[in-house]
Image (cartoon, rainbow over all chains, first blue to last red; front, side):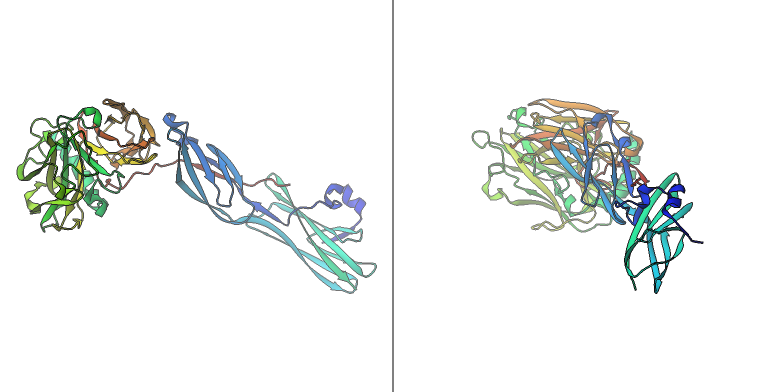
Length: 188
Length: 327
């Protein structure tokens, strides 16, 4: 059940001005398990600890070292390739090892609105693969009014253009993931 | 000794005929990235790259193949642009084909050095080549041979012929190739055949940074190998590459010298081929010799078509996913 609340109430609830009132914003999409750590230390022979490990992550990025970490910005499959530089012969050996990384999980926030005159109803949608433990939704109607809830209702005082911003706090494990999205509506 | 020998060959010859392709019929094969075999005359200086002026190769023909076969030699004579001249051309090279009992089963035939009864078996054909222009850069054909005339080797699933190339006079280097063919005047592969040797005398590719590959087969009883390379002139590196060794460095020979190093064999390397890589770091004409022995000092066969295919090092990479904390 949504509630119309004032900005002071939101601050008291601990949402914080740094989240609701700020201009800087979060993405509407948050990738899960989007980073990989590749640890090749078990492959290192004492005899050839001098070999240099070069990685191509399949998204145009590269790294080097026996242990590397890389994060992907988009969902999809990536062919990770390992090449070896052998300093003893000053040669590179390509495609020594291949691995397909698939980034499939994400949180994506969006919302839909319905208008009737100066009144508006909003419904949020959160898509996910891993169900979050808890989600909080915060609405900023662009006229100085704020509200909490998965669904929200509001009536503007006057016609005009308003930018509605939805902020979601997604509790996932020990993390709090912030997602936000905006829509500009014309109220007649 | 004999029982062990039989078991070893039983194990890998079940794989041999699936691995062999046309590349295996040419010796050296395309797997090996070696241009020519080489045999010098007996008056040559070993520092030119041949320690014993002799080379023994074996061809194994599967039992299922019953048509005549031919053993062809490319540039069997000396005097061509690919041979190694030393003063006037004065070298005689004798090629001899052996079949029948003892061809390969005689232990002396499996030694890296031409000693004892290494020419065992029945002499089936032989010819000595001097400086003969008509054979320069051309194929000379021995045969036809009935595959049944090779030594029957049930453990190999076929019949074995032996080719002995020996420098019998002079001091030039004879560079040549072999092809086991179904045709006398064309190179047509014998399906499922392979070639192997216990000591490889060859010319390295001339270009800088080229890699020659030799493929000894590591049987289940091998616990260590010792690689021996002769007269590499310290021109690069010798690397050992297997499913469990990622280019281990082996000792490299200097001029007219042996580079010898021992390497332990891991369990996962058994019944696989090893890739002995010779990486050249100079542009030059360089002839050299290689052989590998097991822990008993027995020579290990190099196969033109690596048994089970060229090895691929098995990387152990631990992959962990995590969510990046973005905000």
